[in-house]
Length: 266
Image 1 (cartoon, helix red, strand yellow):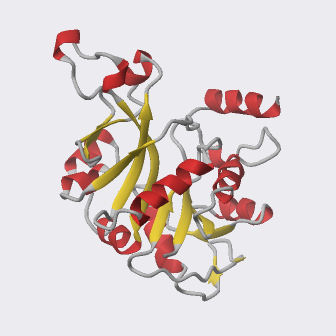
Image 2: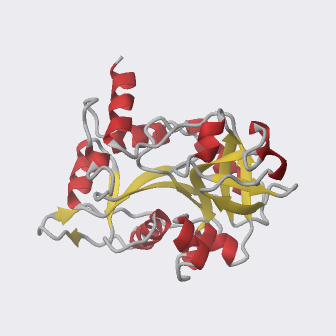
Image 3: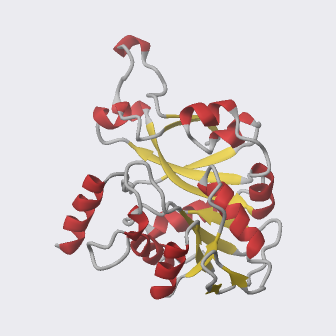
């Protein structure tokens, strides 16, 4: 069974435009993520799916394979699906600027696994990458898997930028939300920290399922919460949730990037 790790990257960002190309550490932000992904043992290949030729050029500069995709995608999963389709075609491509783009040839079977890694998580744990892939490798009845971890503080639980997940007794996701779930009625909302699970935005899909779920329209709750994984939940697909210990914060703002650069440069 093949495992392909893909890092979707878009240039525009509401709170931090061009963040994946920030370079205060001497490396591009996305380069840090790529190098962490390459430390994982399970994936056979790591590629980047970009929406801008500037990202493609940056990726080529540090030796990463990169696929140029549409700027119209609503989610990283949609971008990855386009990249997966394109890498089955080895033809030379011409970018918007007229520059020839390197082509990637890699064939996946229907049951092979595609990983979705967030481009703005430069401290991503390689062991988590391996684990989410192994969840699907070891659970043939599931088409999609993701990760979760314990919270460290009540402030994190109430932070809408940190996603929460609840799962049933078998580890199947019931719901993802930016709101504190479950609601603890006796505690007027947020109860004991141990009652909550923090979602980690890393996913594993079987190739056939990836192409299927991205062919469906965005769902109402997906649009409301701005959480792409809800498309699978709302369409009745089972999402397996594995629990890990290590978490890392994504880079959403210039301030967060400055803190990461300070840690790295030390």
